[in-house]
Length: 316
Image (cartoon, rainbow, N blue to C red):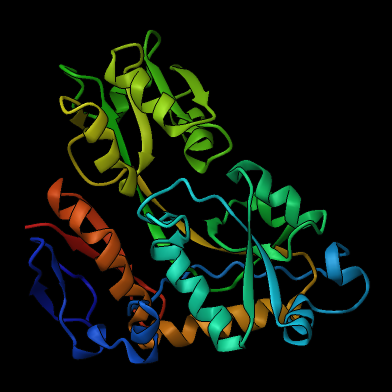
């Protein structure tokens, strides 16, 4: 059930208890573009010291360059469905891409998407190889030393533990033991959290999510820590996996990453996200793309309220 006072509990066709305010279904002009409607979450991550990377060194904002050239060079990793992926025609699609396309359309700018492995996107921003990340990332403090995050989230990412077939583990604390192997994807917040939470276990990271899942599905590892939106693909590959009982391990705040010191760009992106939060655009798109999978596996997920708060949605 939703736990925010601004939203009334309802029932979706996917089995989720979800917000039913009329504004949740407002698509506005984005409907013509095939874009959805929804709101966003609050994790303020502003930095106070000016930086010297990318356009900040010259004093020109990336935003000014976009408006002048009508083009934005955005880095993406399109291997995380349903958040971001390639559709049947090879075009960027999914929750995150709908949002980025909407932002660029509001600016009158054409996005040029540059595909880069997720772990390399941050360095690409710092080096000025891309103007900004076109997808969101967890607001890890170490990352904020290299660039700015928007001061408003795009989404909250609930983290789930998947266990090997036949596992007798019933509590996350049981993973913190010698002889236990936990897999994650290299460079992710899940990798860092797994090592921190379970120091006694053996941590193994892979460059590809499929390898992490396969290690658990074949019994070579005891558990994989992954995002809620990866659960469906995990079970598609190994139907006899086990979901750790209980609530998510934790939820990460994710938003856009951009050049350090570019306050003008940061202010625009923050304002843009805040506006579409109040119009319920982000929450609606999240339920469209992530809601069906959450309902199928009875996972708790979080949309974001108009004020930026997390709104828990639990399958019935």
